[in-house]
Amino acid sequence: MTDKLIIFDTTLRDGEQSPGASMTKEEKLRIARQLERLRVDVIEAGFAASSNGDFEAVKAIADAIKDSTVCSLARANDRDIARAAEALRGANRARIHTFIATSPLHMEKKLRMTPDQVYEQARLAVRFARNLCPDVEFSPEDGYRSEIDFLCRVLEAVIDEGATTINIPDTVGYAVPELYGHFIKTLRERIPNSDKAIWSVHCHNDLGMAVANSLAGVKIGGARQVECTINGLGERAGNCALEEVVMAVKTRRDYFGLEVGIDTTQIVPASRLVSQTTGFVVQPNKAVVGANAFAHASGIHQDGVLKARDTYEIMRAEDVGWSTNKIVLGKLSGRNAFKQRLQELGIVMESETELNTAFAKFKELADRKAEIFDEDIIALVSDESVTP
Ligand code: KIV
Ligand code: ZN
Image (cartoon, rainbow, N blue to C red):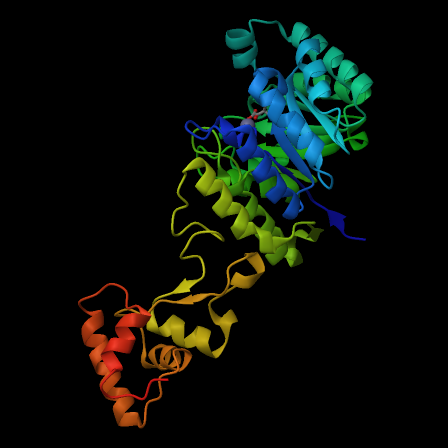
């Protein structure tokens, strides 16, 4: 039997922490419905105790979503956890995600707590959460920069208290893939009760390695949940991009050997919705969801793709929600791509000579104009072709 990789989407919580990306309750609900269509396993809907607005948004999502688990973040204290549980009351499946920082830097400078105090607070928080909800996730914030002996001690205790998922955040995006993968592996090997919980990765993108680190956490470390956001939205340089991690695992199933339950045809609609809602533009060359992700401009590539798409495409545009791939006609295009576009437009060339003349005109125009549109081609051949 193949292992399943759980996709935990935090667009509505960590993604929303991106400066300028804050969303209304209605906007969040709309995105949550799209995430459900995408069939993500867990939707982190917000941080219920952080504001009344967020409480209402988590509650509305918990009441509306039926197929995905709905989760709320909570600091490791009774008030936050009780508020999360209250917001999640209407959910079909609910999860409380509680966290406290465990790195020396965060404990000393931010929390002003001793390691023993943090240990005790983590333990009691998970115990309290488990009394309210059977599904409890624990995150040691800044986990990757934590001292490993202390981290093992905390994680062993919270698993004993009933944490069902252990998530290891690389909160500041400091990790590199091999080291992060081995960090997860070491934790799992050293903690005696580690197999009682599902292990999860949560990587930020400050050095542009969030997806690579997450995948190393899965492959080397044996994590079976990835926390990610649509378009990699998130604080500073963002989070691990859902579309990239999902398509990497699906496209390289030979390497990862894992199943994901995502309906990949909903990826581009989800990307568009998040981009329109937040106003965060997706860069054209962004993997999977960028406008150029399946566009071919060079003549050699166009010729290859027209003969067999897999010459230059490792995924199908249609499989991730694009209507088709794209042959962009411009100065690098060859005769074959031009001929194909004429056929698609229903333009009949009477002879090879006529085609050659039209192609020469096209190349001359393409030297002056970056992209040639269908209207340009129709105008270009109008006096020497039969159009329908
Ligand atoms: O990056 C982080 O540490 C987080 C935790 C709250 C999980 O987002
Ligand atoms: Zn985070």
